[in-house]
Image 1 (cartoon, rainbow, N blue to C red):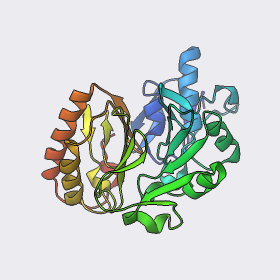
Image 2 (cartoon, rainbow, N blue to C red; image 1 turned 90 degrees about the vertical axis):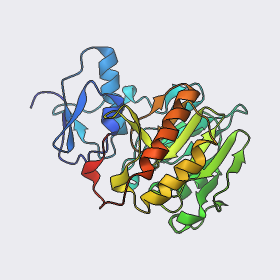
Image 3 (tube, rainbow, N blue to C red; image 1 turned 45 degrees about the horizontal axis):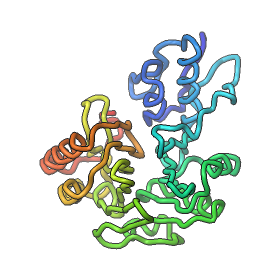
Length: 289
């Protein structure tokens, strides 16, 4: 075996390909190494994928990953960082730190649990709130919130996944979490899915929609919509005209930054496309990353 490879534990969650798309691709429902890294920049991108991979599937036959090249939390923009270290218990979902002008921060969904990682995240600013986008990403919420002394948030539709939440979002009306941050209930993927909007700039969309590299546009994962594609279409139609953002930051699927007017146009078009969809059997292999 020559150099880095992907072992058979890979679940095709797409996380590694988001971080190193020039080095890691997809074939036969799994990630694979396209070529070995060449130079420092590519080695760093590969290590970002290594440390984010929830199954630790990116391996080398003769050496361990270089801990000095763990980039997480990794800055995506001046106000938001990618946590990395994705968890198998959240199906490998991405999670984020949202930095606030006060010097505090909020965590949106959670990485794998580790006290050492928690300290690393808290070093970027005391974490006051842990915001769960929906039930699938609730696994480590209470543990992180307790470690930080933070409030745990979830929508009532998914409350059974975090029954000890400190703040429960109810109904369909937007709710202010803290200054500049608003929760927008978006039932569809699950009954209690929520979108968190920050500063008219960042949209943490959970699993409600994402940026697809395949289509080059916003997309919904209709083949893994657990609750109701019709409800998701209604949620998107209701919400598209209310929000403005530049960054889409999903739990699953890729991230993208575009001008706010362009994002509004694309979200409105996505709502219309979703309206035409019909329920289908759950099929993870059908997601167009």
